[in-house]
Length: 210
Image (cartoon, rainbow, N blue to C red; front, side, top):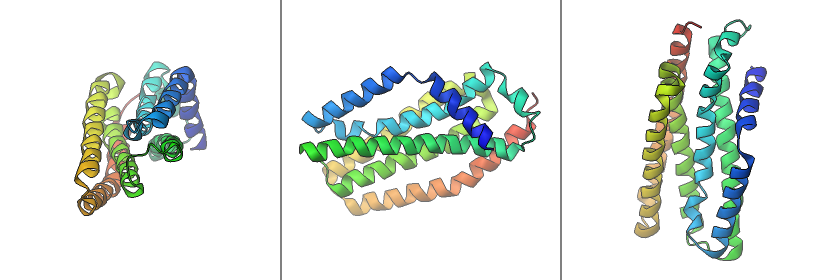
């Protein structure tokens, strides 16, 4: 299974536009130095990591990787789990980048959120990305990269808008108890849906013929 993870990571990293990522991080860093507007936008890097992970389905179709995996001594469950782990690694990388970007306004004195507000916003963003992964992986296995791409963008917009609304609610409403409960519910849904998502993905993947 390590080989499957390495393959996915290599395909994703080889296709990444390093210049775009660098420019984005620099822009967010500068924005956080001079304005509090960058506080929320720092979280976008986590969503970008999740979307990059989902994009690995496109590489499978382009290079006919599924035909090779069908002949490898690995089970369907190992193939599916490796995909979940790869996307998890990318989400974790996005979290690290967000923490670094979040430290800039704290040092510069432009952070407009309290520590608890910022932490809850980050947690909600991560949970939204996990839910995004849990929904999109079965969808991509079922419909493929071409038909699943539209759903991927729509779901991204919905989840990002939801996190933004929650972030604004925290900032202006200051109702931390309600936000805490919403975060707990979101986390519970993510935990419950994960094994279901994996089981559905395994079933769909096993029914495919390559």
